[in-house]
Length: 436
Image (cartoon, rainbow, N blue to C red; front, side, top):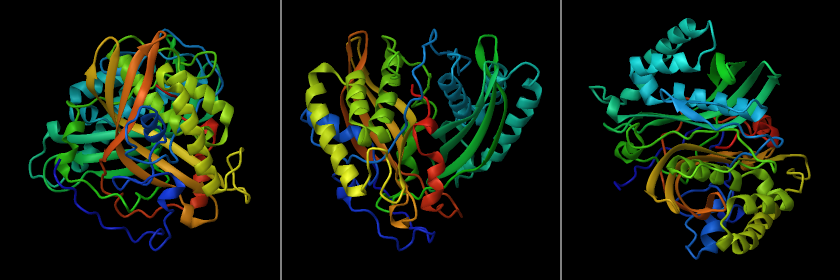
C-alpha cells in the first residue's frame, strides 16, 4: 500500500483537548483509537495477535421481530423488508445508501431505474427531479482535484451510525438517520473527504414493502476524526470504488431472540453476517450488559471459539467500563452516556466456499462519552477489518474478526466538532440501526 499522508489537525473545538489513553479502549494499533471490540475478543480466541483495540463502536436491536422472506435486490435496490420498525429502519438506511452511491450519482439511467424501484406511488416524478439535482451537486466532490472526471474512480460511500424512528404505524414510518459519508476520487492528489448528515426518511407500506415517500437531508452531528489517524492518499481508496466493493445491505430481519435471523447459504449471506458481527460486537450493551453480551456471542460466534471469546470479551467489557466509569445502565456517575456505534461503509469478499468465507469491511466507528467532559467527546476512526466465518448450524458464524490498516478520509471541510453533550441524541439501543 502506498505511504499514507499525514493530515492536518483541525483547529476545531477539539484542539488541545486531552485524548483518552489507549488503555481506555484496549491495545492501540495502526494509529486507530476507536475501533470495534470484535477485532480483539475474537482474534485473541483464535490465537491471532490482536491488531487493534476494543472500543466504543456500534448499534443494537430493537424488540424481537419476525423475519420476512428476505431482502433481495431489484435494479440494484434492496427490497422486501419485514413489516416492522426494524424493517423500516433497514429500508431507510438502504435507500439512503443507494442514493449516496457513485453509480446512483454518476449514471443517469441507473439513477432513474433505482428511483422507480424505491419511490411510492405518485412520487416518482418528483423523486427523479430531486435525485438529478443531488447528482449535480455531488459532481464536484466526486471529481476530486482531477481535471477530467472519471466515474470509475469515484468514491461515494455512506455508513449509517444511528436510526431513530420518529413515528410509525401499520401504514407508514418516519426515520431519522445519522450518517457518515466519504466522497471523492481515487485519482488525483486530493484525499476523499468525510462528512456527516442527518437524513429524515418518510416511508409508506405499499405493495407489501416499505417504499420511499420523501426524504430530506441536513448537516449532521460532526465527530472529529481521531488525531492519531492519518489521512490516506487517494490511490488507497481504489479497492472501494463501485466496481471493487459492495455497499452493505441491512435487512431488519431478526429471530425470536432479537438477534439477526439465519443468513442465506451463499456469499451474500456471508457478507451480511460479517456486517452484523462488526455492529454487534461494538454495541454499548456489549460493554455494560453481561447477559446480553453472552447471548449475542452465542448468536454470532462459532462454537469452536465461543468459550474463549466469552472469557476475553468479559475482560474487555470490564476494562472499558472501569476506565470510563460507566455502570450497567451505560451512564457515568454524573449521568453522561457511553456512545458506541460502528457503520460498515463497504464490503469485499476475500475468499468464499460453501463452508468458509473471509470478508473485508471498511468501517467507521464512533466512540466516547456524551456529557460535559469534552476530553471524552465521541470521536470517529476509519478501519478495515477482515471477518472470517464458517457455515454452522444453518447460518454463518464468526471465527475471527481482525482489524488491519486504517483507510482514513480527510476530515469534513470547514466544520467544527459538536460538543460532547450533543451526542446523547444518538445514544441508546432505541437509536441503533437495523443489522444486516
